Length: 166
Image (cartoon, rainbow, N blue to C red; front, side, top):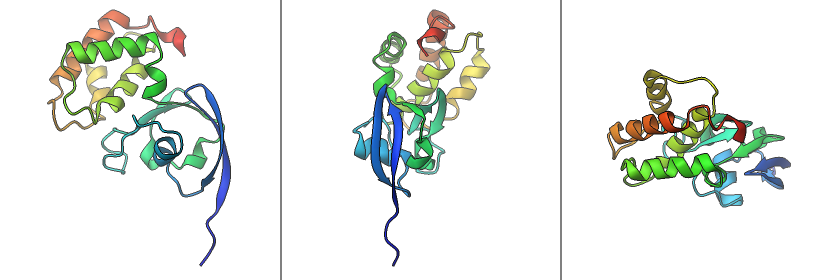
């Protein structure tokens, strides 16, 4: 039996530098949840399909359940906890509440992270673009219409205004 291999992971999570010894087989989702307490990173399918574990790595959405923690070496990671500290994060939360875009809430963080990313783009996005972004996430409760309406409302109020928050 071989001993477990561990290595130091140096990354930034929600603006804070992190240096931790991790098992080289630990997923990024498990690292964020279990080691750092980022409970918004949900584990649904653990195959990268449902989107519940979506985070931003160097500003791009990634599925934390199919990425190893050690692959985040040197990355700037942002979870919903970090996003909610921003003005745009607050607007996303308000829009989801006002449009009843969540029920059980399990998938909400993944949707919010993806919307945060797309709303920071300087170019205007279409309804088809929003549907494509949201279509990469699975929700078993809402039927997507309320989530799409919240996203469309956010786009009309915020599009391009927030790209400086990066």
